[in-house]
Length: 277
Image (cartoon, rainbow, N blue to C red):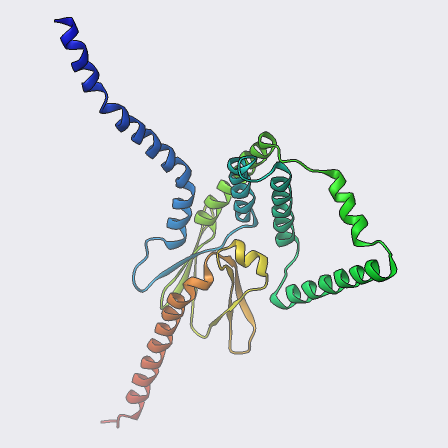
């Protein structure tokens, strides 16, 4: 009897093992996807049809590229790419982040700097090939001798530590960087300080992408400027996440305000033109 019961027990338990593995994989996937889902919900928000909620990001939000590249390189090195290539990718990512924070590279400045670097590179190559004057080659050989290597443990520690200010920036965006645009007013929320309401009468809004590097890190982010009839900047909303993609909805809200003002002015003119009894 015992020999007949043992196969039954094994057949009953075998279907449960894949289910448990699937649940474990699903839970792990949810853990890794949680930050990206949070950012997506933060950017989209739950708004009404006649409202647009935008978020102003602090500089710490741009750390996502360093954290993401660091964790991805841990998976790729040295299985797919070499440790030396992984090190250079991580170094260039850090340099990109530092340049984005320190300098405002507009499109004109970026094109100008690219042209200057290209001219200097071609001139150095010309001097090396025709006059045997070593310029670029010595610099490249110096960095090649340094031979940086990707260390998964060191990069993992850096990424986990940088994850703390990045998560803090998400809370900063939600509690202090949230702005709600409606046809009549702009509502700003500041945690621990209170709320601020701004009347939109007489204001126009323009977008400005002052830094191409930050625009890429901010998923099409830029500055939103409120100007008056004299082209004076009344208020600036910096580093709006996804401004490039949200501008159509925001422009619809702004146009809705202009339409309401036009209708009110038309009604006032009609009232003035009515003959007195």
